[in-house]
Amino acid sequence: MKNSSLPCIILRFTMVLLFAWFAVQQLMDPSAWVGYLPEWTGYLPIPGEMLIMLNGWTELVLAAMMVVGCFTRWISIVLGLHLIGIAWTAGGAVGVRDAALALCMFALASGPADDWSLDGYVERNQK
View 1 (cartoon, rainbow, N blue to C red):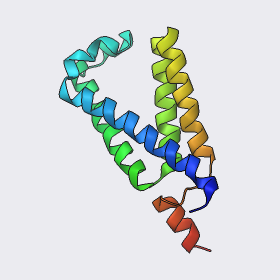
View 2: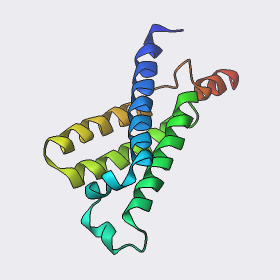
View 3: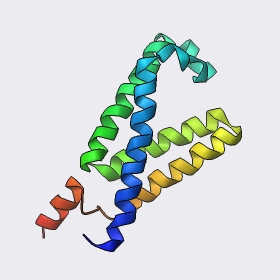
């Protein structure tokens, strides 16, 4: 393993833990998270708890894909944009924190595939 890939590995697994933790929390008690939904979601024909569960499952699946390093760059962009949306809606200190986490996701998307990822394995074997 190259020393230069260690920060990417640490960042990827840290973000996986973050998204997996929030996903599990949302799936265990979706009603506790409905209050965090933006007001405009009340106009959708989908109940708030179902939106929370959909979000939880999506985050959990994407986190699982990131564990193995499959499509890491694309998933990082999608989850980064998701965090920007949350930051915009939340505002305040929570918004600043989530914006910083979104930038971490964009940094992960812009870096090379690390040695412990499926993406890195594929890139190494295509040469």
